[in-house]
Image 1 (tube, one colour):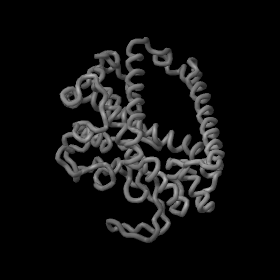
Image 2: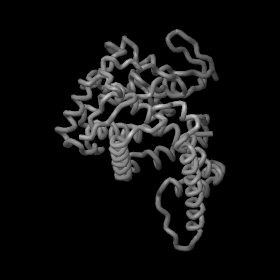
Image 3: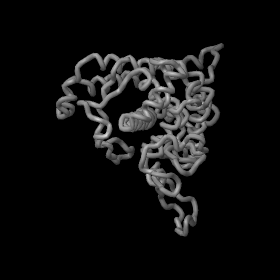
Length: 340
């Protein structure tokens, strides 16, 4: 069971602390910014390569995706198994290294988990560590992290292509601030119009529209309604973001509404709360915010983008929601990058 589904307990507090202090702390993320920069550069290189090649057969005939003629799913499964084998080997090597005389421990996430095991085996066992680093990563960090970030990125790109004047404003600022075709640096994020675009995307298209279920610890009255103890509740952040009493033209994509506003998406403001709030707030928020700004800013600053088949922005109709655990575009965005 992954961290989001564990009830509040000693184990939950331990895992939450590890996320906050080891995986997603400001200090740890700052130390790894070169890795994120390199991944963004790889993304730009892949987009550039794709712009110079013909579309895959699966793009012309979507039915082919079910039989996977290019072997993409098979290849992904093989690489996932290799990742798990590698992590297994790293953990075994670390355990052996800790037993060797004179070994010096570094303060990374794995050593922190092993330290907790030695101090209190009831809080987290070695089996739990392996589950957290391997299987939990597959189901929670890989899926919850990459899938939700990719979905938000796609929504942002779709809105920018549908609203070219907003894209032009962001692009002009990027060219003036960091120079055309240069990737965005994390130090640039705080002063960019891009922040407002990302916030507006979260408001209009929250990737987890009902958040994760909560359980009432006691009877509570909210707005004249009694929520009984132990009741499971959902927070409709999709509806909250589109409430006309808190923002004008709530169904329109208008990033300027966030300029000069104290509203944010980090759980301190109750209008847009795409990551939730309180002690159950998404622990990956700091990483997600960094990656979205880096990816979005870099791709619109490095390429011109146009809709497929000469579609005009005003004719862009495929913006319906597809409701799952996450909120996706019902019709995936089909955009063509043009190398500058």
